[in-house]
Each structure stands twice: as structure tokens, then as C-alpha cells.
Image (cartoon, rainbow, N blue to C red):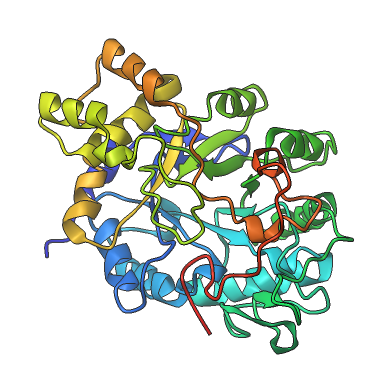
Length: 368
């Protein structure tokens, strides 16, 4: 296929508090299967994407790194043209485990630094506490004696490092920026109270980004405004609201996913676009273009169409119409980690909730 990066010129960039520029749309790699991830990332980088979202627990960072190296070797893109973001895993929240986590990511991605490094979840669960875990020790659930990234106890429940609080992690991550290993640090899956606690530490390096679930059925209006007031760029993951995860616990309130919502479908027909493009256009038009997003696909045609959302504009009336489908439907709960004090969605758990045993596959679908 022809190598081109012309479309990247049309993707707006949002300024982080560090001064760095974040391309508004990122390609996501969560649940991208082995054997196809490299092709997906190469396709994206050849068709306008310059922002790639990864994580070590996705168990595919070596393929992402191979794709980046392949594209850079062609000389059309430079490392400075790219914005690569990854995440600190839950089992590595203790200060002595943070650097090994990052070093594995840097090695797998074949990079000297990454542009954004966020705490993946506020809770240090699952975690074996005593040693760092990476994909090399196993990116799947297993008994804690095996030292994987998803350890569970003798009774089948996730092991929780209940004595550790995310503020200690945030303090330790400051050093990564000072050493030049990461350009900015941020948060993911944190609630408002938890974000405020980090801000109140008033450290040198404040959160540059918050990455949380957000789509037409979970619009996160208050959280986005809170971030904007505090100099944090909000980046939506699960931006299409597909519900495509075994961690989903409730059906869509409409019985369909947002891509199949009648309102979204009516707009797709009106504007001559597919439903995904309508939802992604809604994202990039929110807050005067101040919201970023991650969209994932391994299908070349879909990867290309997902970034082709800057050649049309939804009317003010059609944007307002999305208010009627803001149902507050969160599908990524991961309730099995709710035995940690820092679990972020306790107020959304049902009364009398009883902790569930660890699933037999990881958040990215990897099993032992």
C-alpha cells in the first residue's frame, strides 16, 4: 500500500500542561490480537495517525514496537512526529516496581522515552506486592505463587495490596519525568475525588492527561469540565461504547450499543457517514474541540475511516441531540478488584455487593 502521512496534517493537537502537543485521535491497541497488531499500527501510522496508545498488560507491545520501528525506518516520520502513550500496571504501584514496569515497555516498544505514562488504575490490585510483574512473568490470571500480572489467592480472588495508596505511586513517578524517560505523566480510571487528591499534592509534575471510559451512553460531562478547570486533557477510551469486554456487567439501557442507537444511525444517514464516524465526530467537536480520544480497530478499512472525521461538522442541533442518550452506562467496571480501598467506582456497585472471584482471562482477554 502507498505510504502517506498527509492525513496527519488534518488531526488537531491539544496542548498539554507540559507544552507537548497531543494528537486528538489515537489508535488504541487494547484487545488487539497477536499476529495482527503490528499490521494495524503500521496501517495507522501510514494513514494519518501519529498517536498510539499501548499498555504492557495488553501483551502486544513488542508488535507495536516492531511497527513503530518499521515505519520510522522508512524515513517519512521521525520519532518527534509521534506521541506514544503507555501505562503503569496495577501490580507495579510500589516505588521500587515502577521503573522495571517502564523499562519493559521501553524495551518492547524499542524506544528511549514515551510521551505519556499514566497510572492505569488507582487500585494496587491485582498485585503480589513483593516483586514487579511484566508480560514476561505472565500477562494472565494465575495463582499468586506464579508471579503473573493478574495474581489470585488460594480462594480464587485477586490479591490486593491494600496497604498501598496511589499518592505514593504518583510521588515516585516524578523521577521518571526528571530522568527524561517519560515526557508527561497522568491518570486513568480515576474518579474526581482521586484526581483532586493527586492535584492537592502540589508536586512539580501534575497530571497532564486523564484517560477514562467515555462514549455517547457515558458522556462524562462533569468529569471533563473538572479536568478542563484543572489543566488536564481528557482522553476518552472505549470511545464507541462497543461493550466488547468480558468485564461488562450490565446490558445497554437501550438494548443496543451506541453504534446501533437509532439517533446515531439517523445521523449517519443524514451526513452520509458510518455510525463510527458520527460518534467520533461528536467526540472531536465537544468542548470546542478540547476532548481527545482513543479508537481501536485492527481492520484496515476501519482504521482509515475512523480518522476521516475532519471533513464534516455536526450541526449544533445534532450535537445537542446526544444529550438525550447520555444514560450513564459504564461497561468497564472490573468489580473483581473492588476489594482494594482505591477502587474508583464503589458508589456504582449495587447495595450488598459481594466480591466476585477473578476471571480466568485478563482484561485484554489473555488466559493462562
